[in-house]
Length: 401
Image (cartoon, rainbow, N blue to C red; front, side, top):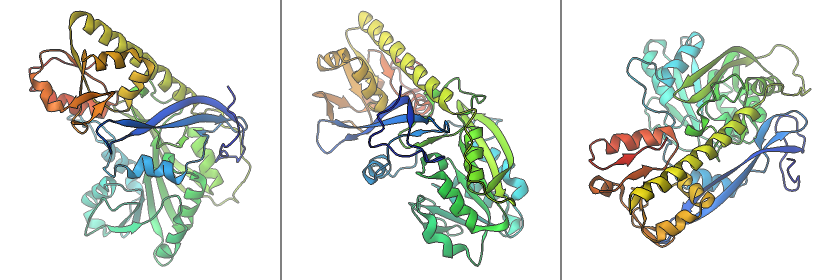
């Protein structure tokens, strides 16, 4: 299906303006200013460029969209489930990948460092190397005395150029950031100009390559309103080349259900080519599978709720977020059941508010319920925390997934 091209953005790989619709992501946030919750809905058409086949959100990201998605909640998101005993954490795997490029006295800068977990791992495991560490981000979540913080809009790094004239960067890091940025080629080009001659850039992004592990993408945040771009090995290699960079190392990993693409880049010695080649193995397969699986899980959940209500006068739903909202939009008969108090709503953060006139109770009250309560979120790290919270409860808490 071809997208109506009016008011669409250009492809950030080849600059064309022609899109084939892959899927439409419905995202949003709750307006909590009043007792009754209202959903501020955001729709993101994910398109595949008809010229080069790169996959990205096909509408411009305005400041109001950024404000809604990022600044309505400044808390750091949970990216991973807890690492099982005896296995390496994602950060340990990252450090193994970049360890050969961490030299004595290196200047290491993390662009989009968040809470600084990667930098802190480097600091703790390479104390003898006399490293200079810095974080570049919108917010100073690190609050460290040993890691310098530089405030910056990651979409506009030009203002930082002067910071690295006398001490260029030995190793730039940017993990799970490139998918959030408006223009990834511009971002990498800016970082390239801050590198030392033998410097490197370490990038990690969600892996949408056709040969990645994409069996359980509905349980991940691979498709998310904050994600503008969807990368495969092929599309990321093209973007790196257009930024004047070459791939020195590449690794595909899977953590939980999350496919990860790790790439180490350095300056190319060849003259940069502006020729854009078609992406032969793109991200569309992974994105389509995620949406198909998501809809299948929601359908299965609705049927489980129907079956539970055949056996019980009342059931509970725990987790009044985006998945809950999508479920009520896809199956509006649930709203009648909520208003009839056949379905009782529970959520820790939203307790005290109402939805379609029905009160939302605190999730701690589930412990004393006598009817089954369904966990609603699909996102695996959220469900993991819900299991931990509820493990001592005598209530019948059901994970439908």
